[in-house]
Length: 121
Image (tube, rainbow, N blue to C red):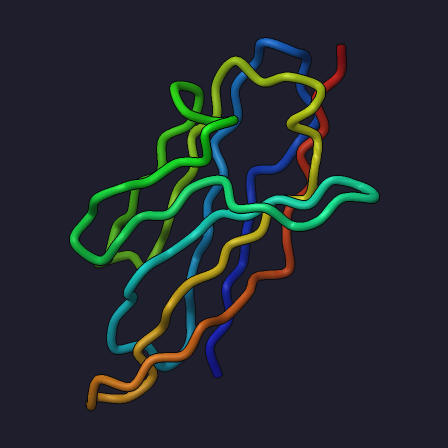
């Protein structure tokens, strides 16, 4: 059974930094595209960043220049470095990844349970 577990969420002051991690475990033959999403109270879940299987990243306009997504395929971990945090970045941050679950190229997307990021002003 595949699991994605996020960690690294915390309470920080505005202007601070946080590094989030998403560790994948279970029967995994590979990881395709991997995303970070966030959901603030009363708002829809929105994409923050994606890192494609070739390592190329894309970012939401609201986060460009303040975040960096990376991956370690050997460790099956996806990272999100966030800098210059603002109170409006307060949200639960979720990992969402395309997992190859068999030796044949069969993929399925999985969500993590989320990690809380709170930015105080």
